[in-house]
Length: 378
Image 1 (cartoon, helix red, strand yellow):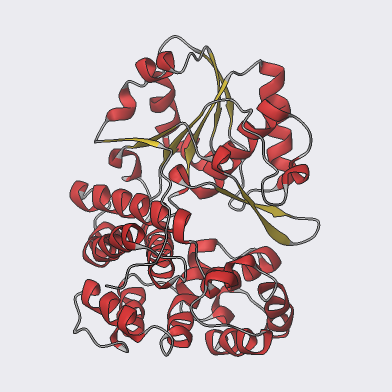
Image 2 (image 1 turned 30 degrees about the vertical axis):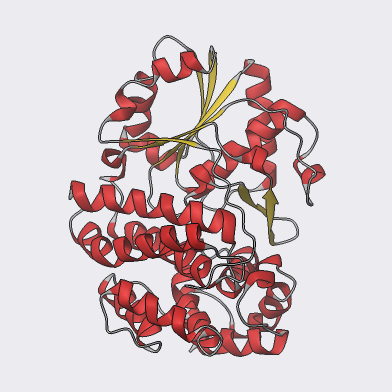
């Protein structure tokens, strides 16, 4: 392995993991000095009864619930939730749900601590350290948002997804309880699992990868290929559910440091323009992006193929992903998820401006991005 001349690795989050650990989080809140918790989630989790179980484990703190987070969180939703939290007098935020919920929790924690409007915090080095504690409880195994410094929030008015980035956005505590993922339906299990795989693969081939992120990413890749089909087929398989939560967490730590590439650039574009769920978009675009990058990093693709359980041939890496998508019954074409063919041009234009491209192992022009989108369309 060729080591970079210099690298850094940052991991500021505290992670707790284990089946059933959300049954009693009261001592953790006491350690954070919390008295009034603003709990953020979505209506699906609330309807399943999981949210009530989490709240019952918080002890004697005062709790206010907010369950209006949509599938793709929005700036207006974040600001409305922050207003509600301020009126309640919250001194902490607990976000329980998928990536959209966790990112909303980060944004609300930022606004509670620092005030203003969310768009005030675009750019590098803009977000101040002043914030309230945020506890992240993922109930899907995909985004790794519980340990990343990113919050991806959709601006519905402009039809774009905006990435907010700062170490000060990393939650104070990440809680991984695989029992909370038992109720995830097969399609959501599959799409969020592919999201984790995309994070790991793009971090591994990133120009900013290093020995620490490589180790995390490769182990995450291996875990996803081994356990995702089992979790999709049997939602109550504890080992598979636990492994997928860990895989998503490892992949989150990897891409928080190494960043991602062209797949995420395109996924953010089609997600912002056409409302395609992030995991679905990543799944469709991942093998196409891997095939584009393969000439630049053939040795890395060989390692991905080996981690997937296939022979260590570069071309086997995207093939393994396509097989996993088929095994998990996920869509493989943009046309099948509602992306209009004439929208590919605007998606390519948006993707070409994405910062994700900076760490892609192969330079991608707008024309090349359009060609990838056309391949993924049909």
